[in-house]
Length: 165
Image (cartoon, rainbow, N blue to C red; front, side, top):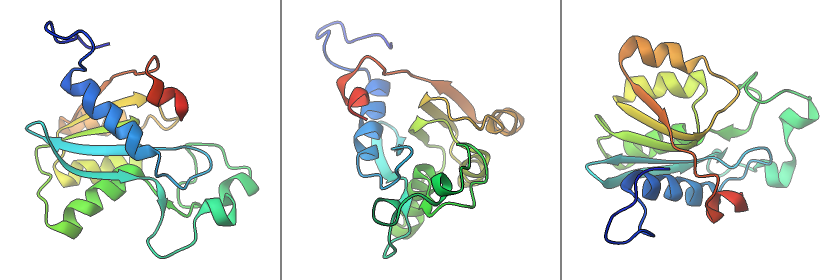
């Protein structure tokens, strides 16, 4: 747990604050397997958010059922067989859609990225990732190491918002 503010021990650090927001964003997820949320921040200001779910205007897994479950595909494999767009992808897309520059930012995410999201993170110019839960796909670590994207974890497993999900 990050160091608390000395004047108010209940006040979260900036990292805790943004990670809690990522968990709150995750509540909008339409995935039956994982509720994932992402918040992109620069200079302590929120730039964009994203959660995992089907493309706008299409039916999601909550109404149609999970194709990956039906095909017994383990988490972290065969990403292309899914209706959902990942939270990190949606947060990056929101930047482009709304003309928000996310270069040199930090991405807070409830889960560490898959390798597909990692590639997008690198090309979007995001420089730091802070995640709570380790996603089964860890191939992103080599890519981040190669290009200098900083990765760390911040576990909020003792906070009520994370326990709800």
